[in-house]
Length: 139
Figure 1: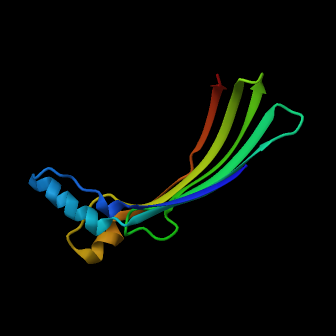
Figure 2: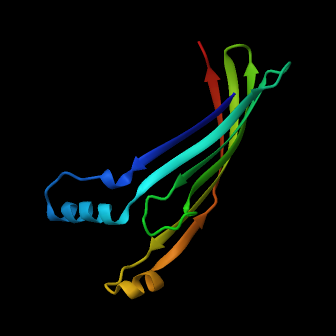
Figure 3: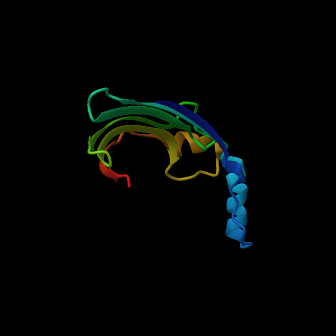
């Protein structure tokens, strides 16, 4: 089985409806600092003939919603998994997922636009690994 998908989210449409001053300012900041976000991915699953085993893998990428991030500042996931059938109704699944996230973060602001990016921003890069095990029972 092969699968693929893509979606677009217009993050600038996020809006808080309360009429207090702080939320009005936040709504204005959302429109100025956020952009549309694109997520896409693909995957495959294969039942091994003659064995009660299924293997799968997938890759996905989600762009950053922040306008000051560069093109390759995003969230990526690469996952590999397997499932072992114990009878027709019970399967134990395991997955290992390697993630990567890169984005610009701001520690503190500066009223001077020329100094804001130079002195208050840094690149955050993390590469966590997740391991999961689950049991599926189909009735």
